[in-house]
Image (cartoon, rainbow, N blue to C red; front, top):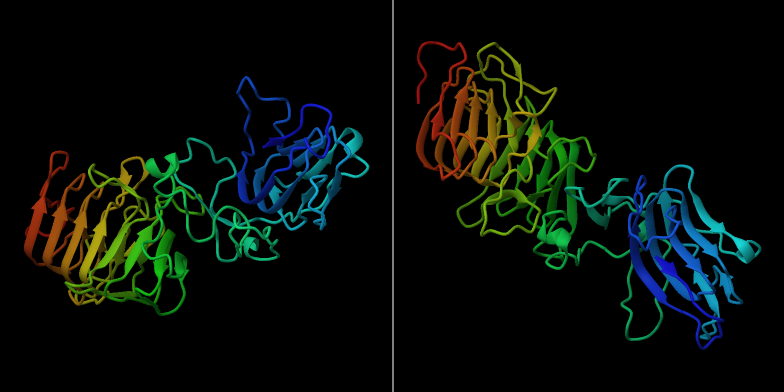
Length: 438
């Protein structure tokens, strides 16, 4: 942003923008290539040639060197205290605005005759945007410019001017929980940002990392799976609840968001025909075309026997499954739908829609569907879990895959392979006994 005037300034002719509720995202390692670019790339905002104006509730992030450059100042008053006068003869930049970036950035650089009385104060705080890498650019596959619940964007605010144009806000920057770019922006059209929640009146709960203690997810909230989340005790999901998954993890680990029920933990996800439980992408997708691989999947690890005794689960490093309890109970899946998953997390390594690894016969799985998964639909790695009334639609690899000595029962399975799918079933044995019940 560059603000300036081009001739001798009077109050009548001075530029005087009143800018509130804006988010500026720079690039920590960028280099301007436009033929019209000047030589001031390192300044994210440039205020020059006597411009006036008001700047409040602003977030400036990913600053590489200088947050605000001031040069060629005129006779305007430059202040962090908003004058009561309505005359356009001042430049007010709120000291409550956030400027953040590299560890050694300069918040304000004042050149020429701006040096003695230029602006110098802002909040150098991480705005804690939900997902914004320091090198975000046109090749970034997913981002979320909204502030997280703990963001300083929600504290120490400026009042907007008291006229009919401005909307009163209780946050800094361009966004609160609503993302108005949805259905407007190229970012939305190309799956780079999340869609708005279907009910903006609901509070957002984020699932990421270890889920502490026994937890219940209800349809009273919007649940966002923003990275890999691990259940270590019991997770209960109320009928009718939807879990929306990010395309990439917010920790920039390169791992796909997934829900992992660890060995010894349980999931109780009992939807109904009228109120199924849905795991899906948070993206605003075009349902007229095939979409897959937009997040990870649902992974359940159990203590039932597998060939080899114990193994590390496919797609998630460091988590083991397998044991000696053929009747092991990992909980219940009933009327559960897993759509648009199967993200690629490494070469020849994608996540299945529903992975049941070493899961025992005490686990209840009925009326479940995987649709548009990039890899397999249901995959059983050993174990003895039984499946009834399962649907697999248009996955990229095998609809039903078993391995490592799976010895369970399946009845009422509906599979549509589609033009680009692989097998309806793939049943390797991996050195298991000579028979495999199906």
